[in-house]
Each structure stands twice: as C-alpha cells, then as structure tokens.
Image 1: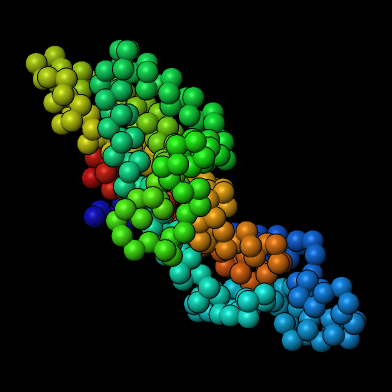
Image 2 (image 1 turned 180 degrees about the vertical axis):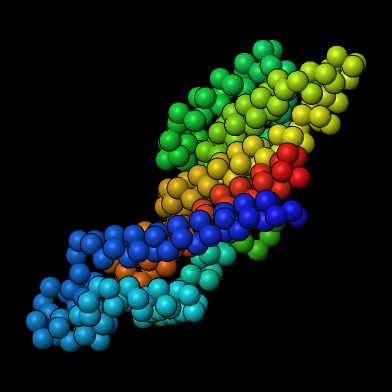
Length: 316
C-alpha cells in the first residue's frame, strides 16, 4: 500500500471518529430534550416531590448535563452502556439478544437482496434501451416511490390476511426449524428488500453504464471483444468502487426500514427495543440504541469509501 492510499484510508478513519464524537453529543442532547420525565413515569402521578427528588438523585439526573454527558461518553468508550431506567437491567444484557435478532434480519435481507439487485442492475446496463431495461427501470422507480410502511402493510394484507400463507407477526425467539425460520423472516425480508433493492439496481446500472462509456472499454469493443466480456472483464472491475458505494448506501437504508418493519411485524429487534424505550423515556437505553445505529451507518459508509480507494487503479 503506497503512502497516498494510506493517507486517504487514515483520513477516512479520522473523519469517522470525529463524526461519531459529534453524533454522540447530538444524540445525548436530543434525548435529554425529550418531553416528559422518566422519574415521574416510573413513580406515577401520585408520587410526592420528595420521592421524585430522591429518585432523581439516585439516577444522577440532578447532575449538570455536561457532567452526565462526560460520564456517559466515558462509559461508551470503556464498553459500559449503563443501566436501563425502566427495566433495572444492564443495557448490554438488554441489547445483546435484540441486536442478534436485528443482525439476523439484516443478514438475511442482504443475502437475498444484494445478489438480485446487482444481477438486475448489471443486466439492465448490458441491455440498455431494451424492453428488459425499461421494465426494470419502471419497476425500480415505482418501488422507490412506495414507503416502507405501505409495503409492509400490503404484505400483511396479501400473505397473512387473504392468502394465510405467512404469520402477520414475526417471533424470532420461537424459531425451531427451517420452515419456521422461513415463515418468520419472509415478510420482513421481502419488505426490506423492496426498500433497498430498487435503489441498488438504479445505482449499479448507472455505475456500469458510466464505465461502459469510457474510452478503454470502447477500444475493447472495437478490438472484437464480446459484450459479455466487455462488461465482466473490462467494465465491472473498474466499476467496483461505485458499485460498493451503491451497496453500502442501499444497506444503510436498512437502518430506517428496520425501525418500521420491526414495529409493524412486532419483530424483537433493537429498533423495536428503542421504540419501547422512547415510550418510557428510558434515556440510557435510547442513547445506546441510537449510537449503535449511527455506528453501523458510519461503518458501512467508511468501509465503502476505503474499498473505493483500494479499488481505484489510478491510485495503485
């Protein structure tokens, strides 16, 4: 790895670190400004002022906000996420199983949607202007225009209510066979795949077409290379950087889609846990879940940037 590539990679990692620090401050400030008081929610409306003040002191909520932010940030860096106010449990114990369920859902969606989207995007670029290309383009634009909750609701109506093929709710903790796993993940994966595949198809098609219009690819065509060889051997390796960026950006949309999908299908993931924490004003749990979402998003984008740098032949 030459010096220029190393500087670019280290620069991306430094930007990620600074961004994560800014995001942590923003998350803490935003959750602190949420309306309502967790102490009053826990004690109820009949609580006396003395009881409220005592519980606030026990939870360290009477301390200045900057001091609480410093303690929370130090805990994050040391791996201590703190305790949940509402559940009186360590947040790591609460998040662990939920994060595992969300990763299973994201992994199943990725394994299904990425190969399909890349294949359709590359074929659409190879057959640009054909009936197949127009059909894929119209379908992808139409799918992008439909919000996630609409896709999820339609899937429930069709497959659960009318056809009775799949359950309306997804209970990941009750999976004991391959058939149960398919039934549990089918509708959430279909919904999330609709969300990310259409965007991935469009971006992959654009990246491959842009590479096909370069002079060296046109020279290969003039030398008698077949269209298949021209795409797979000459164009696709040089379009790897934009395609990886397209995949990473599309997968980052999972973060927003997962919140809606887990809520509609009652899927026991980390997004559903964060929604429940907002209802009880469980600030440490909200902050930890939000930071996990932000960290995953930054990891996806940074990894895509680094792969784009390493795959750039001009830098090598």
